[in-house]
Figure 1: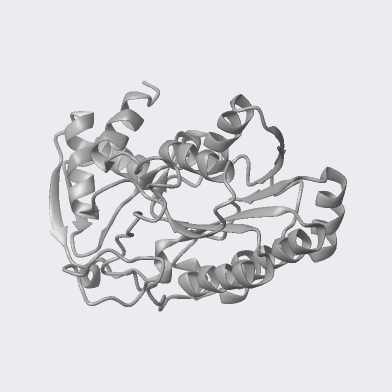
Figure 2 (figure 1 turned 30 degrees about the vertical axis):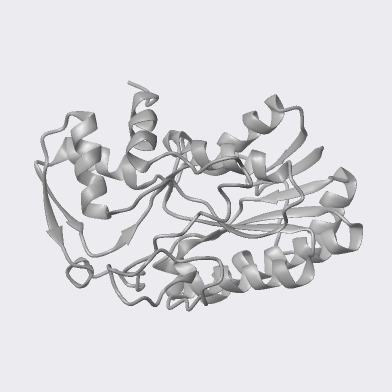
Length: 290
């Protein structure tokens, strides 16, 4: 299969590229310098020359707080961009895979809620979540042969490269080497996910014709405070982690209090669930450069 991989140098794209290549796909890696998904004419020109069987879109505007100040930019990248891709795929009869987020579930009853399924109604609260939800709608409505995959809190080794945007694990490791005490939010429950594990799942999913909306995260759940403590335990860093509330942290954009995703729809399609988050984090840190 000929695949146009958009966002090939990001955290997820960097793990997808070698996996797609080793499974026999002809992959055309596309960075932001190669394609501007918000420009329909550019999308048609670039992808028209590639002629892929599948477009795999990992590009996104994911600056959650900054999106509150520049919602038009977030909407352009996260909604208009996927719409351009969906329209082209529908016209050319190509397949499309688009990556979305748990932030579409901005409203929830609280930390005792059950995991969200693909049938639950998404109610995003922040501008970032709204832009991603809008992009999902465009893809599903305009491209019948599409996969939309929601995930959460991605972390991958590409964050270590020059110019990388970082991730929660790397931020904790950096701060943990600088400080003996950290305050971390303990009232947001979710499942941060290894890009390596997600990439494995996506490669299996595109080998099927089971188009539709899916949730894909590592298994089980935690709060960010619990996640930080496990990072420091595995990294053997002696850091006191003090739990605080979302209100105390004071971020500009509202975060979901509970955004654990039910991934049971995906599991039988790819022959099993993604690994437990403890295992995923341990493997990530074990492969970390010294």
